[in-house]
Amino acid sequence: MLLLLTGMLSAALTRMQIGANARLGLTAAPRADRWHTTPTPSSGGLAIFLSCAAAYWLVCPGAHPRIALTAAALCIFGFLDDKLRLRPLLKLSVQTAAAGFVVLGGTVFPLTPWFAVDVALSMFWIVMITNALNFIDNMDGLCAGVVVIICLFRSWLLASEGYRMDANLCAILAGAFGGFLLFNYHPARIFMGDCGSLPAGFALAALTLAGPAPHKGVLLGGFLYPALTFAYPIFDTALVSTMRKLAGRPISVGGRDHSSHRLASLGLDQRQVVWILWLLTALGSSLGIMTRLMPDSLFAAGALLIGLLGLFALSLARMPGYPTPVWNPLTSTPLRLHSLDSIVAFMLGSDNTDRNLTGPLEAACSRTTASPR
Image (cartoon, rainbow, N blue to C red; front, side, top):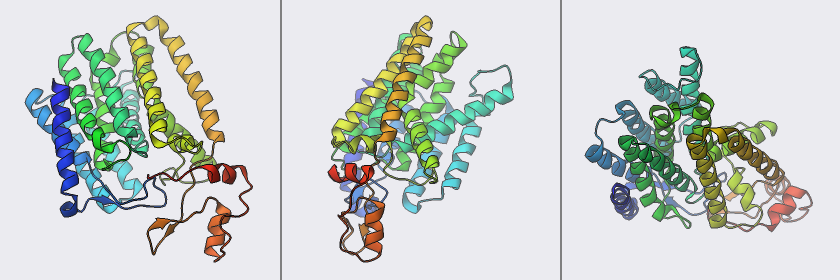
């Protein structure tokens, strides 16, 4: 019931925000390094946050107060980032400070005998997952669906073990993002923006450390449970970071080189790509629960998923990233440019921008079809 009511409230608030967008002016304009090609209402994280706040105040007020307050602060900071496009270093500094505030308040994962090391690892975990959820918000419905799947699995596990309050918190998040997903699924009518993805990643990471599930049982099982649960966001972040480093590009600069974009380069449409990655998230969450309930299976489950993700990463690394368009400043529409040669030709004023697509990347990209985001 809590899940349904929170979802209905979130859907209603999201619909209201879409209707009021002309007055709010919260629109994501198309950019060369982003997936969408039409102006779309953004900062839908505001509707998600308001629905979460209402359910939290009614059902479990005072639960994990540091996490709740910091998630609210990150929502405000994310909204400012949506409006002002803040510098990556400032964003990382704020996320680190937020993680430190929660960890120094007692949310520490006891992984080693040394408290200082545990504090550092806990802060790293929170910042990593915060950024990982922000990274996968790159295609209609992808991030919102991943949050819903992770929260549903985690809520079921916590409820089955008698941790009702923590289960309710996960149900609130699942309902809020599920209601938003009704309008964010392709073709998206609104994006969540950083004011949705930043607090989502932060809350999930911190609640995973603060909740009881990771700390019970064998230590390695306690570590593998959250790692498997967040396997897809971690995988995508590692893949993108590695490929950008190898290409000599800054990790913080966005682009169309995520796992979702590489799958789209095969000709899959957005819904097919999103469903594949949702299923991968569900697989990781299922294996995480299996290691939690059956500790003897943790090595097999971990090895299975690591092996599958390794093969998946090698396959994706050989796929081209989806071509980045060059935007026509006069019409705000993407030009048909698929390669570096095409961009150079455009800059030199040549009209032969569709010729000489002979390389493997260019050939693959030339076969793909443009997508709305």
